[in-house]
Image (cartoon, one colour):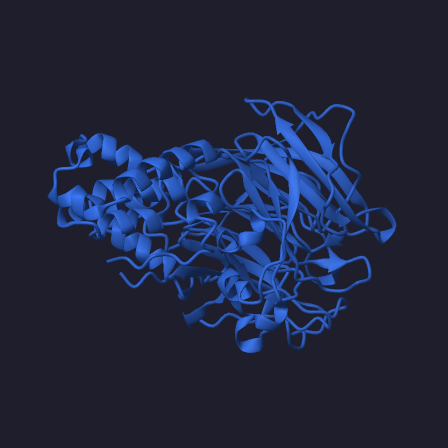
Length: 491
């Protein structure tokens, strides 16, 4: 049987995920406590619960957290069989991971003609994830055109294509090029890079590029003269029979926009909204402001507005924002006002109709293996199960990292309570992953994205440790390799 997910006794896994709603949760638990009061009479004395239609039982179970579903299954063989059904567990996966994630998993297995395991087993393996496998994806042939090495660029996964834009390169030059590469249906192969030449935004690095539907939204960035920008662009991506087209166009946002910045962070929240936080503004000042861009349905215009809340994260740059379920966004790390490198975790929560920041507290002393968590210039990508995979970055003395961490904010009770967590919560919140296969160099200010299932993560570029070959005026070493990080589910 699947092992229950361990959570604080007063807060269920489903509450922490925000699914189902509090009203549904209370109603489901009320029904559950009624028929669980005497499990022997339920199964042996013909309790009315045994007469419920299966679709009614099905609906009740989907209102319950995983621990309660497993407890229900243990009452008798009849309920154990029903609670182990593949139909129920596929619905649980859709509830907890999202419909697009489950659809992408099914498509991936169909494309490779592999047998999809039971959804109950799949859920268990995702919960117990502890390792990844890395694969180098692309080697150019002859004089084939490929993106040059770079850092502080953007990389997005759009309709089975990787879209690479901008960044900074050798000599401190900004880049204004856009490249696309098709990802094979098995998610492990990449066809040649193709350079797009239509209406690209002006060159920049340290910008954000967010996927909204099948379109890209670029905001801000810095050019090679140090000028910060606050313009917004839309990239319309269209897949066709013989390839893909991408057209950039400036977005009309009216008279209000965030102050110019670079090295900020952004992500999509809900369907047509983009969240932006922090960055480096004019005169090198680090910012601590929160902005939301509301986009029209056709993405022809947008409206910026600032969100002022208390508490809120301290000002920073080089941090990450990662949306985990459309209602909650994780902020991690970065460099603060005093140039210190940070390790704090915050949640931006829209689930209750009020926009607010919440601090997720843990004790660094209890991080496994004593590894240093504070970092800047890392990547943070959403994976299956509403968790965040954090890779690389650099510490306060610019030592670059190659470690991979799984951040699971669903395991921390301080998200719903306004009290300090215990030291042991760090062990639940953070899990270091083992990595096999290709060994990429330690890096920072690279770019990463995930496929729609959240199982396959793609990483390109960044700044590396070691001497510059050949020596360049910037004294920085840039990378131009693309590699895959695949979650190993031991199926």
